Image (cartoon, rainbow, N blue to C red; front, side):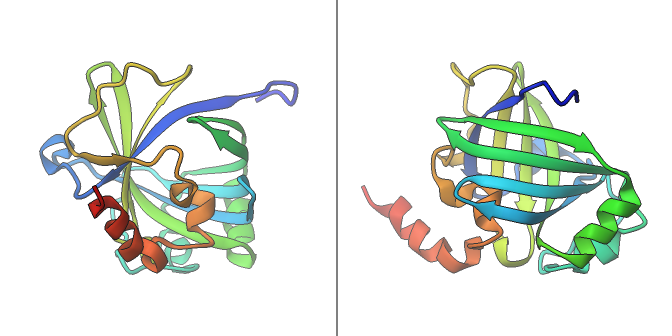
Length: 194
């Protein structure tokens, strides 16, 4: 990406109760480990390591630097990402690919990590990603539809429980500092209220 380009992501995010196995079939998920060096006030600076169609399983209880060590030989993509605060599903995002070895070493040396399995599925005309988190964010599952323009007229699939696009608690940069396990019970009570 050229340094003079400005990118925005347009997305809507939804809480999912359980993986839609009927849609995912036997696909192998990508394993993603994100190491945050800054995650405050809606801003994020992170390194994302990805093992595409990982051959081994990311344990649901894997946390901290453990997933980096487990998948160090499997990672095939490393991105440095800068994000700004979101507003109604629109957020500034700039990315640059990094050397894998540099990204792995930096991720091992510093930052706070968040790990997840990512599945992809096409529904109607939209591509969706479904993230199943591990460690302190398990058993959280988030489905996300991202487009190149604002996400309107979206057909929301039945496996989505509640929209969380504008709930900052569900952003990855918030989850890294305040894991889902710390507030899941409170959120379930909120959902149960009429």
